[in-house]
Amino acid sequence: MAKRAVKAPADLTYEQALQELEGVVRQLEAGEGSLEEALALFERGQLLAARCSKLLGVAELKLQELTAEGDGSVRAVDLEEEG
Image 1 (cartoon, helix red, strand yellow):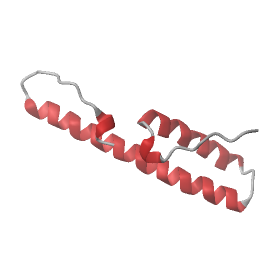
Image 2 (image 1 turned 90 degrees about the vertical axis):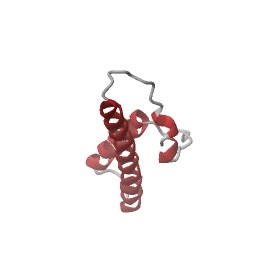
Image 3 (image 1 turned 45 degrees about the vertical axis):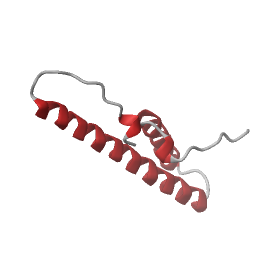
């Protein structure tokens, strides 16, 4: 089975990072593989969780900015540039 290229967490969208993180958790819960593989998965999971947390923080700040404007206007928010 060919391995697919692994993107750096910083290059992933929130949805991509979350989906991969869920897969990592499933693999770790299955308990298959060596200790070395489990440690590598855990490390990847930590990086993915940090990416998700960062993107959620950026989104929260944007929402706070939008609600602080108080004029009822809605502007486009590009979260990808913030990541």
